[in-house]
Length: 163
Image (cartoon, rainbow, N blue to C red):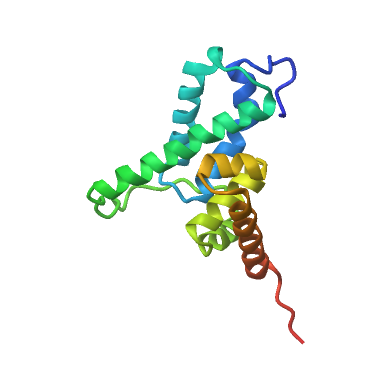
């Protein structure tokens, strides 16, 4: 894990510096309504339980992304129970999303299962076994979804050649 120089790797600051960008990317890639807020929620939970965590860096990464995955599922469930808000006020300016719009559009074309696996494997940099444990799938299923998702992304993002 990458950390701020001088930060204790097991301090909340060290864990946040190392994993927050990937967690934020995870939420953005799933087009969650408030990715920054969800990332904050994840690290509030991490802060509350970090002192009792035992394990190496890989286990810590798995644990944080398991929390993120559960937070995403909770948010989706909550959103399906709520009445959608009306149109935004014309004087409200939405902040620009720094997430690559081409990548976001390409990710949106994947199935939910493909997108989830691709993001956990390649944004969160988790192993096949870790993704399988987090998502409740078999390692073979994770590999298949990852390959199909990456192929779909490559097809969508590859430059077309005109002759």
